[in-house]
Each structure stands twice: as C-alpha cells, then as structure tokens.
Image 1 (cartoon, rainbow, N blue to C red):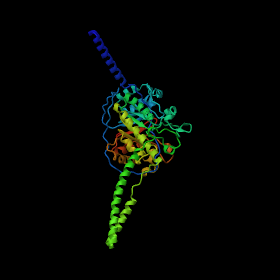
Image 2 (image 1 turned 60 degrees about the vertical axis):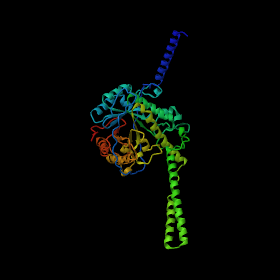
Image 3 (image 1 turned 90 degrees about the vertical axis):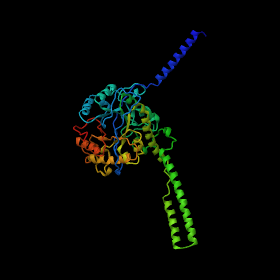
Image 4 (image 1 turned 30 degrees about the vertical axis):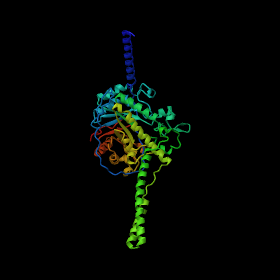
Length: 483
C-alpha cells in the first residue's frame, strides 16, 4: 500500500471512532421531555385510641441544597421553612391560579404542592413519550407554569399519587387486584395498582422524573400504601406477588436472628444454673443442713424462673409473612424512588397516615412510619383533626380540639423520630375544611381560628413547616401563617 493509501485508511479509522463516540453520547443523554400530575392528600379515620409518651427531640434543620448533574430549566431555593398549600391540576392550569398566587405573594406562605399525577392516575398535562396516553390538558403549558412559580419565588412540590390509580388499574388489570372476573375497586370506586410489582413502582417513578425535568424542586409521593382494609381481602383478591413471592420478610430475618441469639444466651444461662442445682443438691444430700437446703432450693427457683422467661419463637405463620411482605414492598418502593431520583437533585417526601406514627406499624396497608421516614427527606403526616376517631389521644371529639390534637400527635411523632439516627423534616398536612360528614356534635366549622390553632400547636412543638389542605383550593382568609 502506498503513502496515500495509508493516509486514507487512517482517516477512515478516525471518522469511524468519532461516529461511535457520538452515538454513545446520544444514547446516554437524558430525554428532556417533562410531565406534571395532579392529586390530593388522602384522609381516613383512625383505629382505636392510643397514647404515646412525650420524647423531646430537636427539630431537624432545613434541607441542604443539592447540586445535581441535571440542570433544571428553572431554579428555586429552599425557603426558611416550607409553608404551603395544595393546588389541583385544574387550579394550576386555570383561572383560580391567579388568586392562589396572590394569596402566597401577600402572606407568609411560600410553597405549592401541585398535582402532577392525580388521584385518578392521570398526569395533569400532556407529556410526550411513553406516558403520553395518561396525560390530560389541565395544565396546558407546564413550562410557563414553572416560570411563573420561579418569578413569584414559590417553592414547587410535585404531588405523585402512587398506588391509587384507577386509570392504570383499568388499563392493566395484571398490575392491579382481581375480584372474581373484574378489577377490584374500593367503596368509593377507586382502583389501585399493586405495590408488590416493580412495574407499578416504575410507572410512578417515571411520572416523578417528568416532574423533576420540569423543574419541580421536590417530589411528594402520596397513597404510598396498599388499599385501606386490604388485610381483610388479601386472601380473596387475586394478584401477583412479583419478586416477593418466595421472599422472607425483613422482619422475619431480624426476629429469627434475635431469637437465635436469645436462645443461645438462654441455653448458656440455663446450663450454668443447672450445674449450680446439681452441685447444691449433691452438697445437701451429703450434708443435710438448713443452709444447704436453702441454697439448693434457691438454685432450683432460679432455674424455674429462667424457664418461664424462655425466648418465644417468632410468629412465622403465612398470615404474618404476608403482612410483613406488604411492609417490605411499600418501604422498598420509597427507597427505590429516592435512589432513582438522585440524578435530578430533588428532595423526596412522602404523605403518610398520622396514626402510623402512633403504632409500631400499620401492616394492613404496609406502612411502617420509621422505615419510610428513614428513606426520605421530608415526612408529611396527614393529621387533620377530623380524621381521628373520637377518644384518640384521650380527646373526646378531635375535630373540635385542633390545638390539642396537633399537640398530642407531635408528641407521638417525636418519639418515633427519636429512634432514627437522622430524622427527616417534619412537615404535616393540616386542615382547612369543615368535616360536616362527621355529624352534629362531632365537628366545628373550620376557618381562620382553627387553622391558626393548628399552626400555633406546631410552633409550640418546635415544628415550623406545614402544608394546608383544602380539596377545592379555597383557603381561609386572614390566617396567621407565622405566629
């Protein structure tokens, strides 16, 4: 080959290498498309009363800023403390938004929780890509919305309703629960997708990523649970266990290890005591004095007492296994979502039933307060006074005592936080609506005074962040948002 030939071959090689490099870059570049959703924090009545002791713990510091590799189209700073309101997709994309912007501008409010994936399962705008079929034009121009929030310095939180998803349950019954020959619905007609399945996880995470790409600074997951009352139907409904089918629950492994350790300690102590009994008996048989008899009897009593305290084998029944697997699935989803969203530099929060903080766990729906709290930046307990059963915390009619209810709840939550090495920010949902459905004598009209009372109770508990819920986005006037 002559010199010109060799030069040609070299040029061809260099061009080929450049093309391969360009293709690799293109394949690894994130899709810039973005999608928001819509939804509202759920509500429920709590189980029988329970009182938790007071444990004083300091309020966590504001969340640090995160510097991600992803550069969003708009930028926001974390405020001194988040004080926010809920905004539906309809409101965010409609005429009501002007009034809500004015409310935030003229008060000490500084944040909005905006539906991006709503209670039905729709995205509240029309995205491109694989989630396009789930989009609705509630927010016609999400990019313009984000720029407006940036101009008004409003901290944006995208609400993603997770496993309550009637739209996907109808479209994909294999991702839901089957009752007889049809997709199961709850008493309100809502469908749910199955938290055991990773495909259900990814559907919600993809919606969250779209919100992050739009520029939302925080992703808030709601309905992170199995359907309420699921434990009474888990043997009737048909559904897939996915990767959890043959798995041993995390709690079983912990209890099994603890039982093995306790049993070894018990056997060692029992062996030592039995030697003492043998020695004392031999001594007494040899020399039957009162003192030797007393020593023998005390040794025998020690053995008897120890046997009464013998470690009990954990409950590894199939029912207990299914219960704990629900807890694993929900907790694992939260940890997975947090990990998947790391490249976007967003904070992650979760809405959770308030009563979950007053119980060891709520395994029927799969919520373990501390396991969820350990995987998020913010925990938003729904502590609406109207949603606690009469007598809870010793309060006869909780809806009529907003200050007392919030005060009692925060004592329980702080006890839970004290068990965590690094507790998340506490940012509860509070009530700005009238729960007339409770019936005469069980509720009071809610307005400025009642909202003020809840905010004041949070401040007195050294909690300065909160979110205010009203389904119609109609908020009381004159509220003192910073008492």
